[in-house]
Image: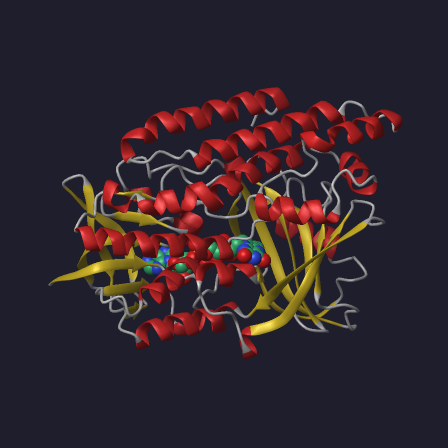
Length: 454
Ligand SMILES: Cc1cc2nc3c(=O)[nH]c(=O)nc-3n(C[C@H](O)[C@H](O)[C@H](O)COP(=O)(O)OP(=O)(O)OC[C@H]3O[C@@H](n4cnc5c(N)ncnc54)[C@H](O)[C@@H]3O)c2cc1C
């Protein structure tokens, strides 16, 4: 039977459930498909940490009650030798993902969104140059064809629909292994009481977590989410092996019970070149809407859902579901959060080139101060910018590290250039190819100047 909807959202993780929630009460006929059961909603392995500001920015409800495992007051960023600790204040939560996800989905269902669980999308239906529906497998194994004016891929890394779009479509943009982190984490009960559970800890150490970091995120006084991410595509060891070999022997990692253990991939790059094409929107991990420096993707997925919800309402109003009709999602994302994300991506590449000695030096001598580290991760502006480089120049010379200065100048300049380019994201699909060529040119210039060959 052919079933018709205004919007079909595939995947009800942070991206898809947020969109379903934002479209509740919209008057649109919305269907959400999710392959897992109710008890496994938002079940992807995660550090479970989210900044509070994301809720205010999107209008999505803040976690409450037992959806909160721990209130967060800030982050401690710890140097490779562990004798420099930058305390960065900022409110956030350690959440119970499943409980928060269940609330978003339930509230969406209560306000008219149809949800089918245990249904796996297999492929998009492509007709006349656009996506017009989804082929899915029902829980009983039968197949069904569902038609929608707009089909949203919110399936996370698997990008089940996006990957099956025609290769020449700009949304079909593969992820390079070096633009991702392979991450592994365990949630454990500890045999001691954590001193300050409201501060989550990030340990920067290229020897333990090459091209990433390892973390210790308290979930209450005696429980923690502990894990690490390593850059993909560079032959680094599997993070689960590193966890066992290098983290389990540490004094603060003393599990009496392992409650959950699993890993997955996190994209750590600039956003996909376009979130939309004819009849199609991609949001969340499959469209690479993630902070490239710390790999936090829940808040970015929510923001992508927020801009998508607005674009869907505009497209519906105009009766135009083409790339042009949905373009507002790109303008809403790329010129704001996307610009910061791209700028942070430039910074991420620089960080992945640094040795432990460089990082130790930078943190110890305040080249990146705590406020700067936070501001950089939120705004995508490197505070060690051209304005204060004179001061840094004197410091670097006096400390015998003059070679770091040109690199910092280079990074600050390219961060600002890419941000500008994203703020000038094309008004309409016709400008996309040219803009993408400019972005790619900027990246290849930058990587060449930095001496990066991956
Ligand atoms: C180890 C680790 C630690 C992390 N730590 C943090 C952190 O502390 N904070 C943070 O903000 N981010 C963190 N992230 C990133 C974060 O988990 C993701 O960015 C976020 O979950 C992305 O949400 P999403 O909705 O795009 O995808 P997902 O969470 O992957 O959700 C996708 C949904 O689609 C469903 N689906 C997939 N395929 C199909 C199909 N064919 N048919 C139907 N449904 C389908 C899945 O079942 C799932 O429910 C971490 C990631 C990892 C791997």
